[in-house]
Image (cartoon, rainbow over all chains, first blue to last red; front, side):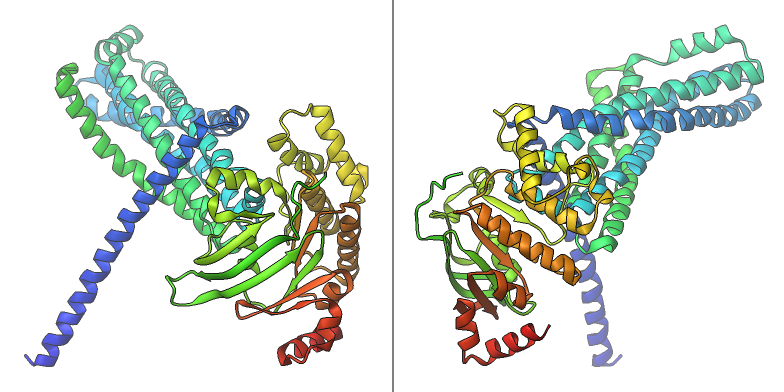
Length: 280
Length: 257
């Protein structure tokens, strides 16, 4: 081995680890910046002038206009999931457990996660695109020079609206998915309706539902902060708006799935400490 | 609205320096400028000479690396974020793209600053002021309820100007108002600026432009920037008489177009 080869290898490794370190550093800085952005914006919500009208307007967009898509996707999620669970449980003669299994899976995991993914794609993408367009069209500069606090006027109402709407949309998803489950189990497969409901009421507790609603709240905070951050800091014209929207949605969706896992474990730990449901 | 500020200069920039890369390179390199109160001033210069950066300092959107920005006798560095936000009510800005809010109608766009800062006014009063401002800039009332996307570029400029005038600002800024417009529309906007300045006596108007012919035609005070500094300031006559090579070139080229 020549000294030259060793030097080149060392330089290559140095560059490789240097680039990884930089990426990790940038990622941590981005998380920190987003956190400060979200916190700084929410803090302004309690400063005058209050923007209740804006909050309602964004709630209408994030919540009301998502009802149809959430209802539709949740019914079919319930149908598909129930059928798959039924096929598995039939092998071990446990078809009466299809209802509670689907109910637990929906309320604790699929409900909040799928609602988060759907709403972040629909409303989060629109938020990033709208704010990005306002940035590149100088509308944000216009607000600034008109003496309007852009974070208070544009960001805080969107985050609050997402926070308020997401648990409600998650609850809607849970309900409609269970309607799909009921339809498949009772009307198509022909299971006993009384046993179906009895098993669900024996298994599903209020804290299971609350767990899902809490996750919905966190996912609402997550996608609204990420998407508004990306839109707010858009640069580079129409191309920049496209990139901001794309990154906002992708980061939100990936983060929801990753954070769901850690959130699930944190909630388990909380259950263990609080002695709820034997930690499950 | 009668001005509260009685000083000779509405805008004073003293040894203004701005760097975006920790002092490695300066966009503004010790810029000194005094804009007389009540004047219609044109800021001209080639692209990349620091016009927009200077403008953002005047608006308090950028903080200087060093130097002082004094607007209406107030040093902007002494204002915190909240005070600065309130202070910006002294400005009216017509942006290059008009920057109208595209989800609001023409009349709603003009009402917006009034709704934000004149909360004591009744809705009818706000609408009346907005009507007056839109009439002042010559927009036909049949367009008042239209969205910005439904009106022409010239009408958008008029609406943008009406919105800029809504709070009766002390300083009216035109950021490249005619860039990208056809000659007829350019002349219309130029005339609109002159008319607006005449109708709003006491208001200091600042126009950033590279349209030299328009600057000579309508401005009573002209400032030329080069490489982050003021190269020459004065009247149109001062520019025609100037021996500075760059000014001569700029005047020759500008007057040919």
